[in-house]
Every structure is written in C-alpha cells, then in structure tokens.
Image (cartoon, rainbow, N blue to C red; front, side, top):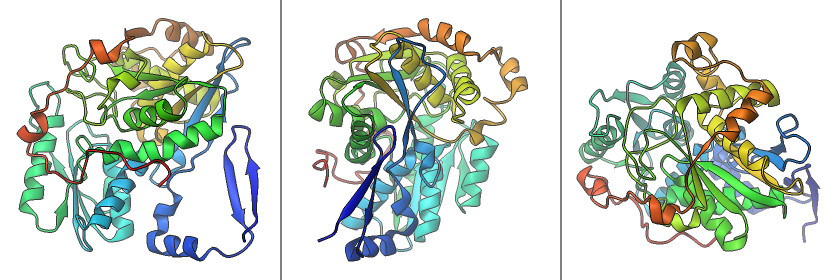
Length: 398
C-alpha cells in the first residue's frame, strides 16, 4: 500500500507525492508525455483589490497549463477521446477554426503527438498568436469573408468543415459544437475549484465564448454545491444570451448564437454584459495591482468578480478563471498607445477599477427565460461533422 503525504497551499491546492513507485502513473506519463502537465492549476487569493469587509477574491491561474491557457484542458480532452474511439489515428490531421487559445493548444498537442495541425483564422488574429501557432508548426489558413453577424465565426467554421471533408485522415475537434469541450471542465476545472477554495466558495465567474468553461463548471457545481452562484460574463456585440450582434474587440469572448455547451441556461444564475473597454482595463488593472498578467477575457471576469466581492460577506469567496497569459496582448491591451487609439482609459488604479466594477450591467437574472438564442440549424448549415457522441457527459471523476 502506498502512503501519500499531502500538502496544501493557502487555497487548499493539494499535491500528492507517492513514497513508492507507481507503475500505472509511469505508463500514463510515458504514453502522454507533455499532456500530463495539463490541469491541477493553482488558485491564489488576491491581496490588493478587496477592501475590508469584501469577500475574498480568488484567481485560478490557467496560464500554468503547458500551452498557457484553460483551452489546453478542452483541446486535450477532445483529442484524447477521439484517439480512444478511433476518430483520430496516428499521423492524422487536426483541423480547427480558432484564432486564439484553442488553436494554440491544438498546435502544441499536435507537435507533442505527431499530428499535422491546420488552424483556420481570421484577420483579427494577433501577431503573437500567429507566432505561437507557427512556432508549434501549425499551418495557417486565413478567412477574409465576414458572416451574417459581421464577425468571422461562421465562415471560419464552414471552411474548416470543408477542409475536413477534403483531407483524408483528418479530425475536427469542433469546439463550438462538441460537448466534450464542456465535459473537460466538468471533470477537472469544477472539482479543482471546489477543492482549492473550499466551503466558503459563494460564486464562480466565467466568461463565455464556446461555452465550455461556463457549461462544464456550472453543471458540476450545481450537482455537488448548488449553493454556489454561477455568474456568466458576455461582451456587448455577442448574442450568446440574445440581443443584436455587432463587431467587438475583446478576444476569447462571444458568439452570434447560443453554443451547444450551454445546454441548460437554468444552471446559470445571472449574466453580466460588459463592453470592450471594461475587458481591456480589467486585465491591465489585474497586472498592475495584483501582478497577474492575463488577457482581456480574464479582465472581464475579474471586473465582475470584484463587483460581487464588494457585495458579499467577508467570510465568503468569489472565484474567477485567469484564462491565459498576458504576453499574447502586449501590443494591444498592455500598450498605452493602442489603448488610447481605441479611446480607452489607461487609469487602472484600484479606486478606478472598483468604481468601474460598481457600474457593470446585469444582462439577466433569469438567463433560461430571457436569453435563449439557440439555433438548431447552425451546425447543419455549416456542415459540422458529428465528431463524438454528445448526448451525455461522462460520470464525474471517471
């Protein structure tokens, strides 16, 4: 029998060290290599933003994943499941519509496991993200045609699906329509948050794009800790929760439909709608005042989490995900010249941040009733493949 010693950080993060060899663990590590570094990211209490009487603020640092973002979790889970069922075979080709972190995660996984990777991107992709994709050896295809919402999501997806049909031995992870995206967070991120933060967890704040983190975490917590408030954050111009579409700047947030991974809006207690300036100011404030360098979607979550912390008891905690590494936004969010060119403030003091947080708008307190924007024909119209069984999540802990 193995004797396990456990050590806990201030947030309850647990590390286990076996005192005897673990043959099964060695076999898994040998088979999966770099992928074993995904998940078990740390959570940290913020020390400067909260004032006396506020709830504690907790950031889960997803930048600690090897590809630098929370998308490593869903990308690896989808690839691993595809390998398991034979949908992805040795020497295969991964084809995905992504100008951001999911594409980077797939490129890393492809390099590690010997897959060719084709990333379908749009002109909004940053030079940093292009550089990362190329560094991992991904091939880049740029879509220049906008879709009916003024964005590029649908035209990118349609082209990725066409390429999948044309290229033998290819696989479409299809993050927008594959519920394995949310399942990854149901199986890993949700349990980690509850374990690390503990009984005082009062609310979890998740931004939304493909719905993976919000859908998976909400499903897990509503099953095992239904008292925890699930708070979604969307960006103005997205129609995930209804409304009229228009162009926006914040990367990693928003869609022009309600994604498959948000299959039950009843698990979301409330939704906040932010504007681009909020997201970019938020991530700058997080870097300057807490030393956490992350991107604009994290800035949006941080701003809403701050608002909640200002209105919850000091004995409770509000958690949010720091989704990625901020180095990817040095030429945009962290450039004073770029911020001013967009008409955004560069005032990121704690007082300014807290004042901005107080003004954040509630989009809906009843998302299931007010905001459903499902379009069951979108996947079919875009030619999305049936990549994996999607009816049910796996049992938590499997």
